[in-house]
Length: 461
Image (cartoon, rainbow, N blue to C red; front, side, top):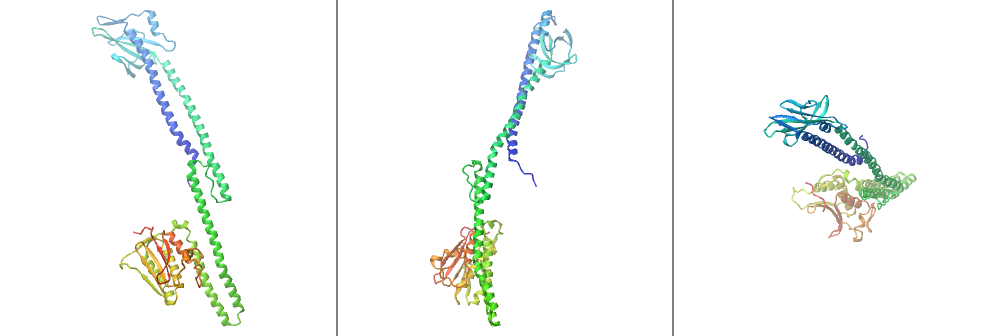
């Protein structure tokens, strides 16, 4: 199992990393630029000294020489921190100066008129050297070099690094402050969660969202929507349990009375008569239980869990008619299938075959039950829009009851015979799961017709 994520830590990382990156890059660029500026400044000072010395060089028949007083030499080489030396060289020969230093030219930097500055070593110590060419109008040249140890430069570098120390302190302070601000920002989330948790344990009513931050409003609305769905589910469960208990109470009482009658029956013939009544009652109770179980499977929340497939309405009508053919023949009722389309035409939709068969079965059962002996029950399948209907030649349903009979445990005002009032309710809910409409209207010659019309349903490929 993957470790649970911490929102605060993720926010800190995502907010702090760009800041740290920006600070580090800025510090590096600033340090590089400042160091380069310092190096340039020191090189210019050293180059000024070398150029001043080059102006003192004199040429006699192409031979270079320099004449400096002790005061000039002292002025040129004086430095409280670093040691400064100079050298005059011509054609590989040192003509003046205290020492000769390596001229490999590491860290070399060029100036105008052939002047350059480079790193070297003098008496084992690193020095920075500025070299200038002294030129004779007749073409002779000589190299003038002034060197300086690098203590001031090193101190300047250390000072630059020390100047960057506040940046590290700033980063640490920013991290701490960011953590504190994030905790203060996220704290209302915990407060809201605690309040909602306490309220949801006491009630499933909507949680007030007027004080919820805008960023959390979609979450609050989604939670309230979930609570509403839970309330609806619980209400459906309570309603189902209450109506089931109410509907089962009467047949169970009838069974108990029937058993008592059987126990008091004076002879075997009377006992058999009571047992026959009990058998009929048991069948009615079994049908009621089956209808209740069918209703329990039709919760809208299970729609995404159903296995949907391509359903041919003509084949569905044939299967349903075959299942109720014996019941129709027992009442001498003619059961017809009417499809006014070419024989090879398929009318297909996306649906759940078992549930659709259950719906058509309930329509056929109602039609056969209320159609008198010798009547007709017709199953009709149409293509535009895809629909399937069951019509009969029975007494029909009064206009004022045509909507009410689709409610659970509701029957027509003039309905006769046994019935639980669940058949059309099951049909309507199965139709709703399939995005279809359930319509009831009277037939022209008497009787009624119930149609499942898949107007908004996409036909299957």
